[in-house]
Structure formats: C-alpha cells, structure tokens
Length: 68
Image (cartoon, rainbow, N blue to C red; front, top):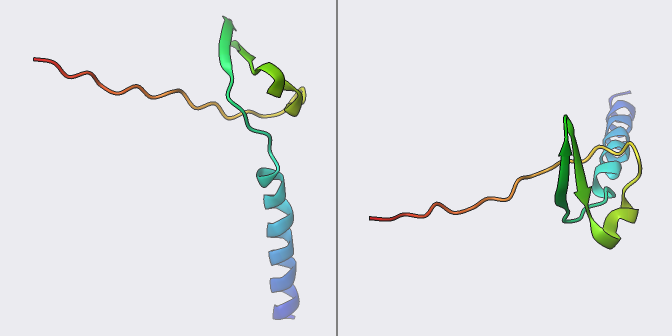
C-alpha cells in the first residue's frame, strides 16, 4: 500500500510540474500602463502566449553608480 501511494504521489508531482517546464518565455518591453493594466510588446514571440495566461514579470536591475 505504501509503494502504491508513493508511486501515485510521484506521478502527481511529475504531471503538475510538467506545465511549468513547458511554459513560454520571452523578453518583452512595457509599452503602456493603463490604470492597473500593463501593455507589453513581445515582438514575434507574442504567439507563444495565450489570452488569460499568467505571466511572471521581473524588472531589470541596474547597478548603483558610485561617485565621490
């Protein structure tokens, strides 16, 4: 019984993590901000995304400029 439960849990993990691995990625540029909505321009990579997809946005980092 323990082996069957372990196998089912492992299978469930593999099935749920597959969607994360197959997610589309691409670099986009913010073109407009309309209230609480952000409009992104992804160029020819926009076809990878579908309406309603959740997108994780990471802001670009800039190095601090040190001066005298």
